[in-house]
Length: 132
Image (cartoon, rainbow, N blue to C red):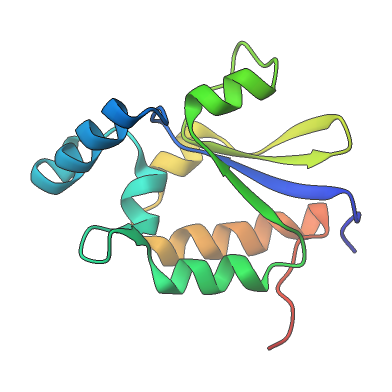
């Protein structure tokens, strides 16, 4: 069972300022194969200008909350100088533990790969899906 103070912290390999968001939008639209954030690439829909419905549904069914941060936002909140992005962490109280490494995140070919990995690795952290 997950600790009630736990959350998953997803970190995009992109900054959250307006200029970066606009630049990233055009990069994802016109050269998606060279975009450096696989987390963005597999969880966002250019057509819908936001997170894929399937991803939102999956995240909402997790038994712990999920937080999404841009690289600069993560670096403002946490002191992890060797952090690599995109990645995901399990935060429990003031402890941050790597959940999905940059290498793992960049290895997913699609959203289904990410979801399956999260459920399998999440067992060790008490992460699961709530029943519908």
